[in-house]
Image (cartoon, rainbow, N blue to C red; front, side):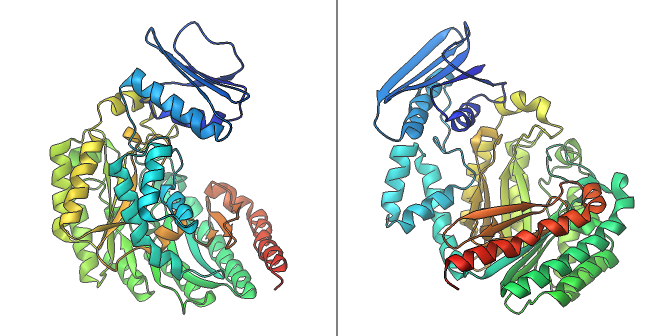
Amino acid sequence: MTLICDGHPYHYEMEALCRMFMQGGGLSVAEGEQVPAEDYIYTGVRGDELTARVNMGGKEFSARESAASEHERRLAVLLFGLLEKATGIRPKWGILTGIRPVKIAFKMADAGFSAERIRQELSRSMLVSDEKLGLLLETMKNERAIRAASTPDSYSLYISIPFCPTRCSYCSFTSHSVEKAAKLIPEYVNLLCRELCDTAKTAGELGLHLETVYMGGGTPTVLTASQLDRILAVTDNVFDLSKVREVTVEAGRPDTITPEKLDVLKKRGVTRISINPQTLSDEVLEAIGRRHTAQDFFDAFQMAREHGFDDINTDLIAGLPKDDMESFRHTIEGVLALSPENITLHTLTLKRASDLAPEAEDMMAGSEADDMLEYAYGRFAGEGYAPYYLYRQKGTIDNLENTGFCKPGKEGYYNIYIMDETHTILAVGAGGVTKLREPGGHIERIFNFKYPYEYTERFSAVSERKGQVKDFYERYRAGQGD
C-alpha cells in the first residue's frame, strides 16, 4: 500500500493514521499527485480544498471538504471515515495517534473545559469512542492531585539498568542479555555511580528537589546484590531524599529475585517494586522467551511480601502469542488473588526491532486483545482498582492502550510524572533520556548513549552533555527574572 501526500506537510500524522488500519501490513509514503494503478491512499490539500481517496482491493472510496482552518485534523477525519469503510475497522481512539491522550485532556481542562465538554469535543473532533473517553476521564480525575503536587523546582531521577536475563520476543527496548554483556556490567556500574554523583551535584546547585526515584531497564535485579547495594547506597548518599515520595525498583523478572537482593532493596529504602509475570501461562512464557514459570512468579511475590514490601506492581500483557481468552482470564484471576497494590496492563506492541515483527500481520488479524482488556478492566473495577495512568504506543495490537491500575492511595507517582511529562526527569545510564521541563510546558531532551558499550567507552561525552541541564535552568530562570 502506498500513501500519497500531495500539497501538505502532514506526512507523519497521515502515515500514523493509516498504520492504525493496516493490521501489520506494509505502507510506503510518497509525495506529489502521481498515484499507483491500485492499492493506494491519497491525501491532498489545494488551498482550502481537502481531498482523500482510498483505493483498496479493487474498490475506491473518496471524500472532499472545504475548510478554512484545521486542515490537518479535518483531513485526518476524512481519511479515517474512508479507511473505516474500506477495512471495516474503527479504532476506538479515533484519530488520536499520540502516546499521551490524558495530557491532551489536561490541556483542555486548563483552558477551562469541563469534563463533559472534554468528552463532547474529543468525541466530535477526534472521533474517540465513549468507552475510551470514559477510561481517559477517569484516569485524568485520578491523576489530578498527584500532578498538582509537583512544583516548578521538583524532579524525578531515572536510573537505567539495560540488562536482562534473556531478551523477550516482543521487546524492542535497549536491553542486553547478561550472557552476552556480563563483562560490561562492572565498569557500567562504576560509571553509573559517577554519573549519579555528577547529577546530584548539579541538582543541588540548581536548588531542585527530588520527588521520585525509579530504577528501571532492562531488569535491575539482574545485577548482583552487592552491585544493587552500591548503586542504591550512592543514590542515598549523594541525593537529598528528604522529600522523596517513592523509590521504585523494577524487579521485573521473577527468576532474578533472591532473598539477598530483597534484603538490599529493603535496607536501602526502596518503597515500591515491580514483579512482572506478563502471563501465568507457562506455554505463553516459553513462546515469548522468558525462562521463568508461573510458579517462579508466585514464589517471588510471596518472598517479597515476607520481606515487608507492601507496594508491589505486576505487569501483564494482553495479546501475547499463544495466549487466548481462557488463559488470559486465568492470569487475571491468579494475579487478583494475590491482591497486588498495582496492576499495569499492557497491550502487546509489535515493534520493528522485536523478534515478533515478522509475525505482526497474522497476530493482529487474530487478536483477542480488545476482549481481553474489556474483561480485565471489569474485573479490576470489581476488586477496587482504579486507572491512574495511561499511554499508547505505535504498533499496538488493535490500536489499544497501556493502563496502570491501583488500589486507593497506591498510585505510582513516577509513572504519572514520566507519562504526562509533569516535571523534569534526570536520567542516568545507557539509553537514559533526560527531559527538562519548564512550568509552561516547554521540554528539552538530553540523550545518553543508547548502548552500554557506547556509554562506557564514551562516558566523557555523557558528562559533557549533562552540562546542558544547568544551561536550561539558567535560561529559564533568567527569563523569569530570578
